[in-house]
Length: 81
Image (cartoon, rainbow, N blue to C red; front, side, top):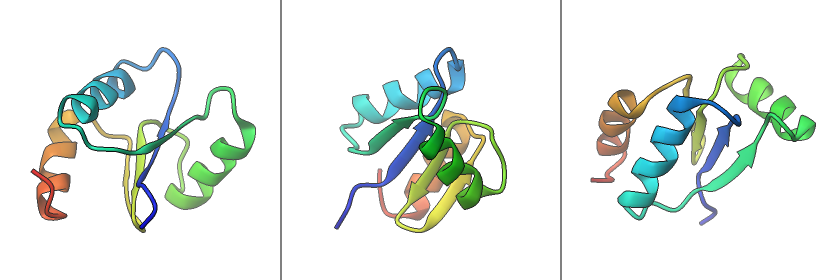
């Protein structure tokens, strides 16, 4: 199974917190820096209908414009503790 995709922007404090949280929990994701990757930005907008980061594509389920407080229950709902 492919890794979940995390879209982030440089200088985004919520993105930094989410990346640190996922690293700490050893949850692997494929990360795209949309602030310097136009194609990834277009993918994120097409997927989520908005341009805010972070945005997570968890095997087809999208969590957009979130922080760690929203990520924790999202991951639990998908069986990740």
